[in-house]
Image (cartoon, rainbow, N blue to C red; front, top):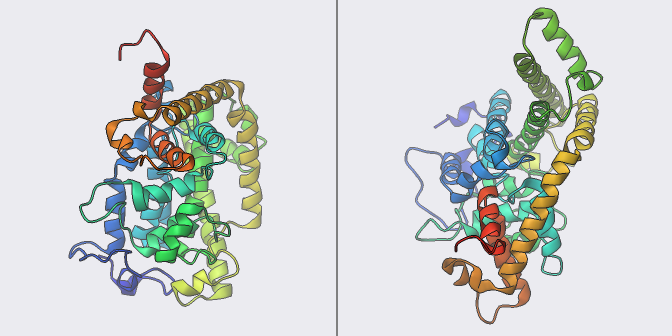
Length: 387
C-alpha cells in the first residue's frame, strides 16, 4: 500500500476513509480503495461491458472500442494524471472503472429508448443505473446487496460531474442513510476520472470514426490541434502509413490534453491552496480542469464528432434499430412478466405498482449486452426461431 506521506494534502488517504455503509473487517494486504477497485472489476456488470458498445454494435468489428476497453483507457489516463498530482491512484481508478457500469446496450441509443419507455415511471438515467448496480443490483456477497463500496468511491461515482442538485430516487433514498453530501464537489480523484473520460472518448471516437471511414484525415486538418499534429508527424516520418499516422497523432493529442489539464490544475491548486480533501469539496468550482482554450478546442472536436459521426446516416440506421429493439423488449416484459427469467420474476411482488414493475424490467433490459438483447429480440419476435 502507498505510504500516506507520499500523498498531497488534498488527496483522499485510505486510512482516513469515511468507511462503508455496512462496516466490514478490512483487508491486511489492500487499501480500502484497492478493494473497491477489485470488487468493481470482479462484478458481473463490469464483465458485461465487453459486449456493450459506444457507437458501433458489437459485431461490426473487433477493433472498435467497447464500454470495457473505454473504461480501461479512462482508468489508465486517470492513474497517470493522479500520479503527477500526488493523488490516490486507486480511488481515481475505481471511479473510472465504475463510471460506465449503468450504460444500456447500444450506447446512447439504448439509453434514449429506456428513457422513453420509463416516462411516467421515474425515468431512466445511466448514472443512476450505475449507482443502483453498485448499491443494490449486484448480488455476489452473502452479507449485502451491491458491492458495499467506500463513501469516497460512491461519492466519486455520484458526483464526478459536479454537485447533484436534483438527485433521482435511488440516490436520494441511499443518501438518507449514507449521506454523500451531494451539494458539494467531489474529491480531486473523482474530478480527474471525469476529465480522463472526456480525454479518452474524444480521442478514441476520432480513431474509430476514421477506421469506419465516416470521415477522412483531410477533414480533420482544420480542427484545433489536429492539423498541426498531422503536419508534425508527416514531417518527422514522411513515409509513414495511414494507420501508424493516426495512432501517432492520437497519442500526441492525448498527451497535449493531459499536459494542459495538469498545468491548469496546478495553477488552480496554487490559487486556492486546499489543505484537505474536504477543502476540495468545499470549493465553489472544480479544481481539476482544462485551460479555457483547451476546453474550447475539445468542444470543437465534440461538435465535429456529433455532426460527422454520431449523426452519420450509417450510425443513425444502427441507432434506429437499437431503439426499436429495446423499446419492444421493454414493452413485452412489462406486459408479460412471465417472459422474464425466473430469478427476475421472483423480484416482482404481486402487489407491486406498474412503476415498480417497470423499474425491475428496466434493470433487466439495461443489464443486457448488445448480443443478448439482439438474441432475446429474435427469440421473442421471430416466429421461425425455435424457443
